[in-house]
Image 1 (cartoon, rainbow, N blue to C red):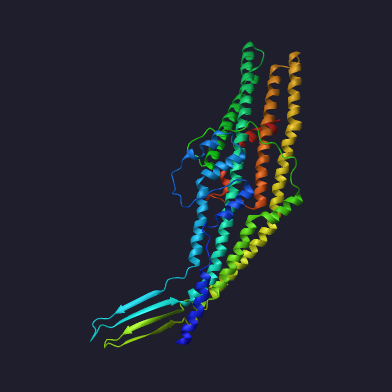
Image 2: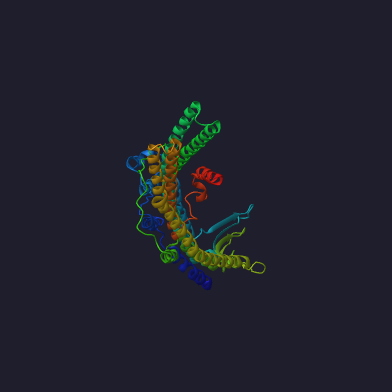
Length: 478
């Protein structure tokens, strides 16, 4: 009896001591908030005690009255997007799971009474507690802590990736509006050319074929303009959804893109940052810690069903008896091999995942840098070579038109070509700023995390595709 009590006390005391370790009251939100501010320069707030209210745009109305920049768009989205708030609730769920892993399971009481009884009714009372639960408490607490920290990394990465998605959607909308303005210029020029061709055809100065060709170009320009209008509408609704707005708001955008930075990072800088900043690598390290803790818990799997307790019993003739009880599983068939093998395999899998991420990180960052540099080079080439040349061609055509050496159609075509080059420059600038955001995501390794259940890449609208296709067809004809 004394030896059994000693064994139970020795097992119970360290288990109780381990289970009393503190659980963060803020669910680790302070760490998440600090990480998000560091990487996005924008603060995020979360108050789990506040009741969930219906969506209301009034909370961000003042922010929307000012000119909407990329940083302000992220600020509005952090304050108003419900997917983001739902993701933050994962911290509360992780905290609850950590509390559960740190809590000793309740003992079981069983009772029975038998009828009839002579001279008294016999009964039996028993109190049992799983000894394995006490032995595994330290391991479960370690496992719960690792899962809790992994949840914090996962939520931080999802919020940072969401900020990048908001920025890309913002640049999509800004470029869509500028492209629409250029497309309106092209349509007006082509409309004037078509109207002139009709008058010249009536006067007998051009053939039926020339008139049909001019009208066909006008119809194509109208289709491109309609597509540009759709692109602007889709981009605007996409930003509205990212900002969490219920009603369609009048978003005040700047006239142009932000100023370009003086220089870009080198390949060496990108590679170095990819090794130190990536959150998916940090997440993989947390998963290894989870798997290691699971291996420790699995070592005692064969003792499942080990219980200790006490019972009181009264016989039908009146005498009572009391004493300790123990139930010990006999590991003849199931020695916990399956649980141990599964835990070891999951540990090896987590280690292999970390190795794969480490190898892929450099390549992904270098590829993102190359896309950024290509977009910058294309944008610079359009600004410094193509557009100035198109502008010079327009001025020279204007001079020759004034001298009656060129016709009006050549002049209108030169103006249309300049507007088309300006449209392509807008698209290249959009690609640069999107590429810059994607490079930052690659350095942080957050592209696989999302505040929604949808894959992030599937959420962005496909802009300007028909315009590029039309341009390709025109080049093939030439």
